Length: 341
Length: 221
Image: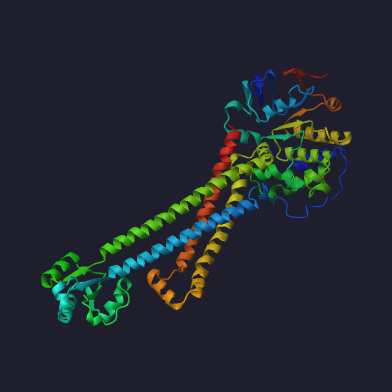
């Protein structure tokens, strides 16, 4: 049918059977056709937006914490892997303890020999004997403050910096050390690393589970919201059906609102979580004294998110938006399939 | 174009609302559908509009067996049909202009392609001054005209109208009938369900009479 509706009206008017219209009826006052077919307010109300914002906030907070834990653990592991220790005189007999001054001198001599031996080995950048004072300071965490350290039978520690590009064979090094210096033992921190990996792995796993729970809750909420949006816009869906809209078109009218909701809620949630990560350390610093701050820093390091951590919160925004889009798409299409079997 | 053979329809386990309905409508035909209240006019229109499926019998529209059509095929078939409802079914949050343009918007046409057509049609049905008004502030007659404009804007192959002149004055009724006739002349098949015998008497055209769930064709002389 090539004739336009204008042609119909003109041909009908030319027959003189129809009332003559004013020559120029006013044009629409605003850009017509821009009104959303499904009103946004009927799909994504304020309370739904609030719930999704909270979900996004929780997901971002958990994600940031998992990121920080993993990053801190990686730093610890790297520090441990780049530095091992050798212990000299770790198991003194009671007889040796009785003659403590002589024992200390013997251990110090042996420790220097071990230091020299280690410095000559391949894959070791530097072996350095710790002073008695440093060793005592190191042991403070277990033994408390020690005065007159010379009067105690202290073993000696040697810190060994490893060339990580070509590390030594620890088994061979351990054997060589035991053969040449029976009182010396090598600690490559493997046990610590294993425990650390287990703890950080568990924390990360817990975080991921929490994020998955938030995602599952979001899917449930959006699914239910899609159903109620379809119910409250039943008239619009019917009209769209009548004017020949297919399921894809109808679903798109709803899912675009849910996508906008996901992006909006995700951004607000990410900004809120980002603010927590930014201001919480400042607040903690402000509320604690210098000694606590130093101890805390020694224990857990810097708890601020780096730029990569802040950027990774965008991934959560994308994930929340994708969940909103996909869940609403399937939800609406399911309902349409049930209505039009 | 439309072929019904022994079509029956019942809602749930109730008795048949339509029984052994058989007819064949050719492209470009013009029919009135008449019958007493409750005779099944709206139900037959709903069948023709693929809003419901027949309980039995064969129903072909545009050469397609509608009982076997998938939802997307039904949507495609519906896009070739225009319908005017008794209760208008205009979307209250959209202006009259946007309501009329809706079928074209749904089918992905650019606004620049149809803006002039929509405006001209609205002027022609006497709603030129009400283009920016929202349906809740329109009178019954204005709503009816907007609903008719929406049904014909897409130049459908088949136009179904349920009591299209029920809420307008006789002058406007004649004007709307004129529009239906013009559309029919351009090739659109038209079925108008009505009680208005005055309207039916204005043109000599076959009448589909529904009585007690059965359909009879009456050709006025």
